Length: 412
Ligand code: NIG
Ligand code: FE
Image (cartoon, rainbow, N blue to C red; front, side):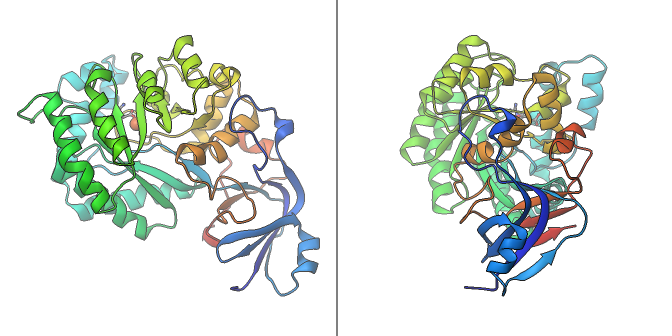
């Protein structure tokens, strides 16, 4: 066993243990240890409990003794981002705010296709640097695990370039980057065949390569009028499932249809859901597909939030992710966005914090993080306060003063 480390004391340690995965949560469900410490061995949590008791029990542990009041939370998990891209879409944002819609801008040659053009022009090194920069920016706001999608390449070669850039960036950052292939983000404007042929090509030529090169275990698609219909995507998802990929869906962003596909294919998550109605809420709540709200896309597009309150009340699992991307969600900063979603959708502290920790871990199928619990990764953030409620109350403006990843202090 390597050297033990003891960190504390924390005025409050929120372990996020013993919470149900599904449904509404009151704050009384939060597991809070007062005057707490975390004992770490080999990058993992060995024990949590009263700091002084742990110190006596593990006298050989190297102590990182804190002064002042701190609240400790698990590292945040951002289960949906697109932070590997070239260029900027600041002009799209300006156009939207002067009255053009997201779909109008896309039809006029802006939108996702604009980022595809700029990402194709960027070499792998440039994409790695950009991804590292954005992952590290998110680390400072407490995010220690980020899902990162491809989807701005839209050809076999370019999608692989992006996924390789994500793989390389992952080696250069303290956080863990979980790759997802989003080659079905839209129908590439320069593809000479039909939509069906494009998806067939992805299924036959790209998916086996992803497995062979170990570039991604997750497949995503954008189900929308401007991208792919449920009927078009079905054979692609069928092949992805046969090959053992997890499925996730960009669902119900502007119109419905996507969450039904997600549930039908047993997707791990259905993300967006701004347009979901009671029918989709019912479908999701009766399934094991996690409903992921993306408040950053609502803020970036100036539109309504996903019906988070209704989803929770219906018994769904709600995760909250940033959708950090150059177009619809340029902000990043999951904590701020989750706090704002909580204010608009009337979510408890427990529901918001679970949505960016333990329930977000489930949306990525990760069993080793999201809570501060024996055997889990020692990923956590400290905030300078004596009351955990201050964190969401400050709506993201109370930033972590320290971030730990795998038992290492990676930001302070
Ligand atoms: O999740 N909805 C589709 N895809 C992204 C937007 C990507 C972009 O605009 O570049 C999203 O919002
Ligand atoms: Fe997205």
